[in-house]
Every structure is written in C-alpha cells, then in structure tokens.
Length: 148
Image (cartoon, rainbow, N blue to C red; front, side, top):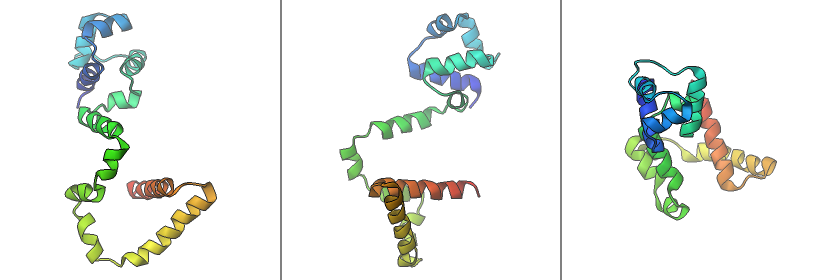
C-alpha cells in the first residue's frame, strides 16, 4: 500500500473527516486530500501529528494495513473464555499443515524433554507461571527463526 492509502485508511478507522483532520493539524482539507492521493506528502512533523491523532506509531502509520489492524482488534477483543474454546493448533494447521503431520514424522519425546527443562528453568529463574514461560520460550524461538 502507498503512504496515501495508509493515511486514508487510518483516518477512516479513526472516524475522522478530512475537514476534521485538517482543522486539528492547521492545514487545508485539500492538503489532506493530496496526502491521501500521494500527490504530495506530509513532512515529518505533520506525519508525527497524524500518528498521534490516529493513535498509531509513526512506523505503524507508514506500514498501516487495515486487514492486520482488524485481525489485531479481533484477537484483542476476544474474551478469555472464548479464546480457551478455540483449538489454536487446528486453526493454525489450516494455514500451516505441518502442524498436523509432524507428530508422525519426529520423535516428540526427543524434543519435549529439553524444552520442558527450558520451561522449568524460566519458571524457576524468573518466577514465570507456566503460560508466561511458554510464551517467552515461543518468542525466543520465533526470534531465532526470524533472523535466519
């Protein structure tokens, strides 16, 4: 998406008109329109004001993706009772089929024991409960994977 498109969607998500944004920033409505159509671009100071107005970081504003924002809101607003009913492995397996097939291919016990020890160490060293220790370990693994 273009910056202008990002600005448009962020403004719409905020429920503001071009006129309202223009008034808050001290610019004309036409200026907002030009930014949203990529005819011109806001300077860094105006960009920062837009990010504050829309409740986004500057990075989020530049990379604004309406679909991602909608998904984030759904996850954030899902009550814990409902979340506990979701079979997350099955749901993710629809996108990543390996989650249903790996159990027939690898020795789970070979990997489970060292991982269990890591979880126990996180709990003992930092006082994390089981879920928090799991989430920290998951995040560490995700970080290793993303640096490949």
